[in-house]
Length: 304
Image 1 (cartoon, rainbow, N blue to C red):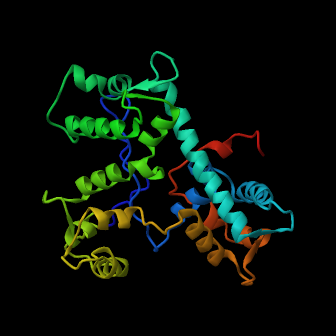
Image 2: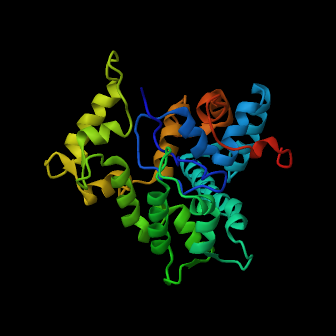
């Protein structure tokens, strides 16, 4: 049984209150899936709406988006234009995410969010009536959130401005947050508590096998990836530096890689650019998945 590859999960609600911070994405998977393509191309807030549209309406709206992507108006979407569009979608998602949560946490409306404000909104019910049983260890989760908040808080006053709160919610986008992202990843994946990630833990983070199930080819490839690329010093485990290279590879451009993938999928005539028809012919790659779990923005009619 395949576990969901983490694209920002853990939407667990604390006793009807707000939610702890999301886990950061840590899998740069070459075995692409359409859900990821939809999110990267459209942005989270737009991708999900296409599943609620009739096919002809999806094509019409996608056609409008293609016209917006074609910045130079030559009738084609180049790799550079596709790359720029995906980066724009990523930045828009981060901005929308912060804006959507800001008022919930800025209780006194002073334009800043203190740790106490965040803690009280997110964990208030638990703090009033602590419970040790259940699916989640809220004490541990609160300690993790506080650690991340301290790292994001540049001046150490435990009060976050918009930039600091953005780093708190989306640490993978900020250089000074790398260490805490690595620490959280190791805590999530390291099951034996040795502070390292071995092969079994690495595979177990993305795949749970059934007794009567043959291991998929992609899992076998991941085992090879671990041995050949992840475990650089060949000690059978990933340390902090190796984990950092796994989740935030220094030379990996997410937008460029996804743009290249989409170009490869849709460029039928292999001319290095995409016509509108080529994109519309690959509607299932760019949009429209029935299992996509993101966004509702395209249900609004102001842009279409």
